[in-house]
Image 1 (cartoon, rainbow, N blue to C red):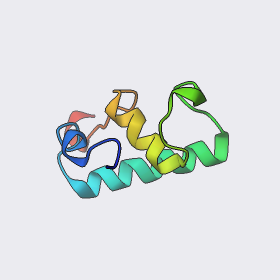
Image 2: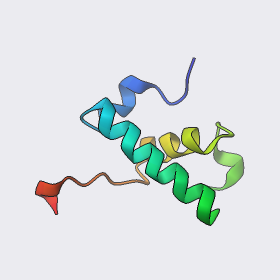
Image 3: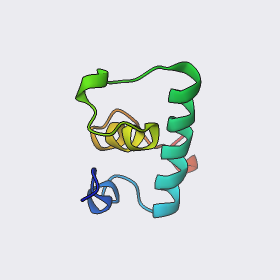
Image 4: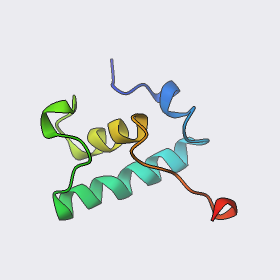
Length: 69
């Protein structure tokens, strides 16, 4: 089973496309800056894309739409 669950993530982000977009941006930031918002031993995933999804699930990433700016 994949962690975190897609169903749980879709309660945070309103579409799969936005979820992929946000996770890919955060994953690239992790690769470029080596900055993680949690301690590395707290992540269940080893890859940055999974870690980005975990950060989203834990509320460490806030998704802002144009209307909310």
